[in-house]
Length: 270
Image (cartoon, rainbow, N blue to C red; front, top):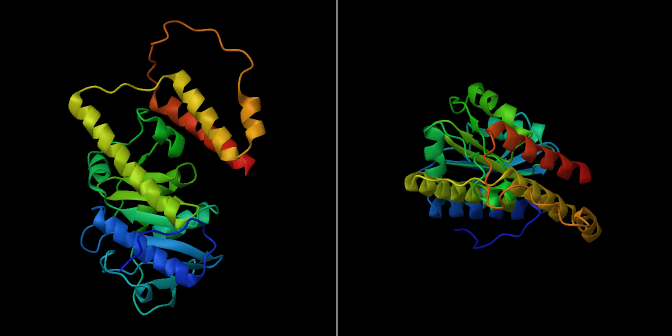
């Protein structure tokens, strides 16, 4: 029913986008990120058209012909089925983030468990998450399919690429569909690791110095410039400050400030 792989990139034919959405729908269903007819997926076809999964259909059973084309107001302009009632959340993300071309919404069990417990995934315990997603904030509860939901996620869309929705699930997005899906995978992986640390009764946070190095590394990596990377390296090693094993716990606000600064630098370079 769906492909085993999809290629990166957002510049594709509509037929390719249709196949890709079905592939990602199958992946989400196989991994248990959605059950029954849960979840929704969309891609930006152009400046005024969105291709999205239909309502009331298993994401693991979709075919390319089942998908729906809408305008940026959510009005159907192609397809025989109805679009998801949560399409307005996707449209909000596209309006606020011109760099986004794909959105995934699902209910991965562990990450959704954190959302249902009222807990954000915002503790610096995994270097990969700091590099890849930064903080995953928690939006307040909003009734699905209503303006409450879009109002709840709106404050977080510009500065984050993944959001937990209280008592609901997770939404991720990116420059292409593969990126949006991989961010969903990363969010669930982080939630699993965070849960294990909670069960073990101990979480060792990355220090402020560790975080500074990570955001600098992210800036060098995303710039794609070897010269910029070399210039960013210190000419002489910084003198040690205190115990080399010392760990500093950042507040949520301090961590978000560091990540936000790195993201702003990334966007300024593009």
